[in-house]
Image (tube, rainbow, N blue to C red; front, top):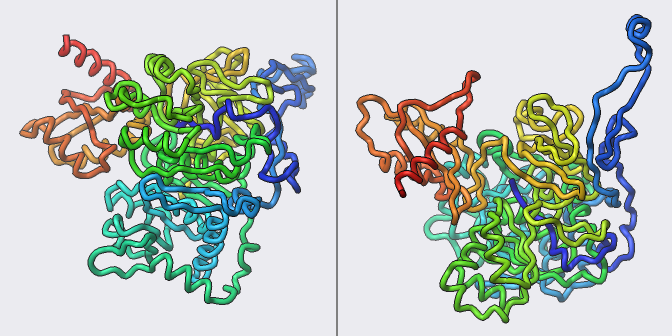
Length: 610
């Protein structure tokens, strides 16, 4: 589960979202999102449609009226979405009015990008990429830490007609190579720090930044590439006019509701529609007022869309941080007057419990809201944070990569409500339809009845890259995206997430797929069987844990097996607890009973601690 909303509801007026410097959405057309089959189904009201039977024999025996299954569909209100705009055009619309305003600033170095510089370098990069032969639909993998140039790179790739695919720079070279190969990437963008990881992947490389990689380097360098594009004439490829709103623009990799990482195909239209919905409540008077912390990874859809694109669209400022250290974090919040901080629960825990935070002068903070993201927020932590930071609003919301980021929003200005209930993940966004279905029967369920959350809108992904079967298991024939999360909607429209069908582990906000770690464990010659599952953890939210069946003659210890996994995966995927068992429990259909293993290990740990 990925959580995010665009801006603190305390900063949102109760008015329809407006683009910078405009009183309307211009050529916007109201888009009707996936009308249900029955015209009587609206806003979650219960209805039953009756129709005449086409079967005359059945009609003679049973009568001419049959009842269809009841449907419970809950809709957000309708808002306009502009037609024909690419994501870079939408995000940078009106940038000339804020030419000298700082759009992006690096907290560590002080490097800044004004809106004029962002718009200029996005266009320069797009031209340079077309000059290199990048064609519409070609994928460019970006392996960078959070930095001010990151959104410029992503938007420049999209403006050229390419497809941006962010990769975790902390991943192992083999993991990055797997993404490069699966995506059929034509180009890589990285910096000197991470060049060694990607230098031998057989793909042309652009290196950003002033630092040069050590040793032999066959890469192109950012400034030289842009300067060459400035000197060159038109590319002859139709420039940006060739890029259509229906084209792919992003290919983030997500574990989705099942298994290992898959490329999620998102179009310009997907992301523009999502931003229109999430920024619906931002009026013209709020343009340029938000200072957003850019700490969450930009390679994730959460960081690049929900933080960077949302803030750039409303002409705020993104304060970019590469890594989290509590003292630096608190200093950045105060020094840059950050008023909105999308973070994860482990950071909130550090803010509450760390001795470094205890000595901090909280009066220096301008922070008005934090958004918990990517992991559930424990009620105890929420209470402790509210006690220490009473002036800071806590928001929880919900989204997923397969839905272009944000799905449920914290505030609902249209209903005159600035905040959802505690422990709720918010309300249904505009232009979205939501339903909750019985996982066994597929029937939609009424209010206050837990079921699998399904969502339908123009934000739903085009599919998983080269994985048609998994796409069809995730998005059904009626266009409903099945999230794999169990939740319900109450009488006031607040949505609550209570469980997960899907088995992803959320370690400090990072997604860890049990199936991937099980494959690594099973590659060890002494491991006969293995199961990976989440264990609750106060600091990390959840940690990857495993139960392993060893071969009879094996002599490895639990620590040996954990070290083997650690050598083959990124640090956040490491198994943090491991226990040898005689057998891995499975259902009659062969599915691993992860919940049984988790509960047994929790009991074992409690007994050992007693």
